[in-house]
Amino acid sequence: MKSYQMYIDGEFVAEKREMAPVYNPATKEQVSEYPLGTRDDAKRALEAAKRAGKNWEALPAIERANYLKKIAQLIRRDRVKLADILQEEQGKVRGLAEVEIDFTADYLDYMAGFARTYEGEIIQSDRANENIFLFRTAIGVTTGILPWNFPFFLIVRKLAPAFVTGNTIVIKPSSETPNNAFEFAKLAHEAGVPKGVFSLVSGKGSEVGDELSSNPLIGMVSVTGSVEAGVRVMQAAAKNVIKVNLELGGKAPAIVCKDANMDLVIPAIKASRICNNGQVCNCAERVYVHKSRYDEFINKMADEFSKITFGNTAKGNFDMGPLVNEAGVKNADAMLKRALEQGAKLEVGGKITDTSGYFYPATLLSNADHKSDIMQKEIFAPILPVTSFDTLDEAIDMANDCEYGLTSSIYTENLNTAMRACREIKFGETYINRENFEAMQGFHAGFRKSGIGGADGKHGLYEYLATHVVYLDYNTKFNG
Image 1 (cartoon, rainbow, N blue to C red):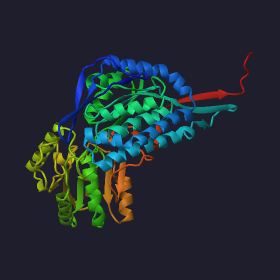
Image 2 (cartoon, helix red, strand yellow):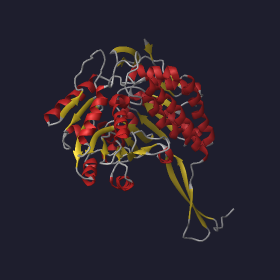
Image 3 (cartoon, rainbow, N blue to C red):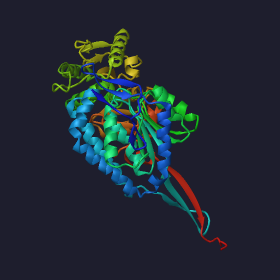
Image 4 (tube, one colour):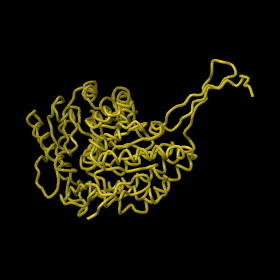
């Protein structure tokens, strides 16, 4: 059985720590153990990051970017092994595990490309003989607190923009899926990343996570997780007025209009709903179908859902793997029962037939009331609730009537309808006639309780930069 070590200040920590188990959710078997770090471990990592910051920021951005490129090369070298680990500890289907590994390497190269392109500004002055310069500078010490659903990619979604802009970073992996992060630390070490620039501290959120949110050395904390986790981080960060960057929950609506191409709609929404076994914050979680197409949609989606297979993705070619843990299964089952009590009709699925792992079948619900919990609360399981609408105004109002605001989608052949959706749907992202999956050059951000700030692209890079405005009067006569 594998046993991992934390990575702090350029070294793997050999001192004994209390160890915690990691389980394969497809088999419920223990596959590794990892150390439960302490507040002192987190403080040591932050102090190392602070010490390393001055020299790291002083390097030309292109030299910092070269470390990202080296890590990307090593990831590609080890892609098979890394995909194996993702399947083992998180339960992804093989194709998605490989996509995550490859996308992570590509993301590092993409962010490295900003080394020569991110810019400051020269601002017009009201005074003669004065220039106003806006410099973009590193924030300093940053931290990243990770979820378990895309654990490998999310390391670099936080690390890559931090590195190229001259920040140091301390990462805390999810306790459900830490193995891939320890393997990443080995690659960063092999790439020769300077001591203290990157550290990895595992442990409990209440201890390590709190320290990585509240310590006064921190300039910014970035979190991907639940709304509850985001609130706790904001409260901890407020003690020292630390900048927060939060990607939290989602409850993505999909609007299927009267003129939608159902041959496009069905596979796109299906793919979005069962992606990563239904455990994606930006996947379609509720569907609004025009009443004239409602029965057609239900019949066709029910047929598709009835064909979806699930099982141990390391042993067979299944459409889905397991949920991440037992709590996920219990939550999905409780939400389904509550939905049925609130009037929804079960069309497909809903019955747990395989308890060898944390499996949950693809489940389709019709007649779901818009105000019911299944249409308002994040599911994080392959359950798809559907209801109907009469007018586009009604559909958009229902889509916006939610505490979340991360992603959304609409299916229509009408350009006017599509443009109305762009203007009136109040979500960070809207996908038109396609599945919900963002591009690295976009900007992944949300409204309402879905978060603060965002990630990816130029705007995600600028999240890791502070501004320093300098007023230079070049007509002043200096002595000496």
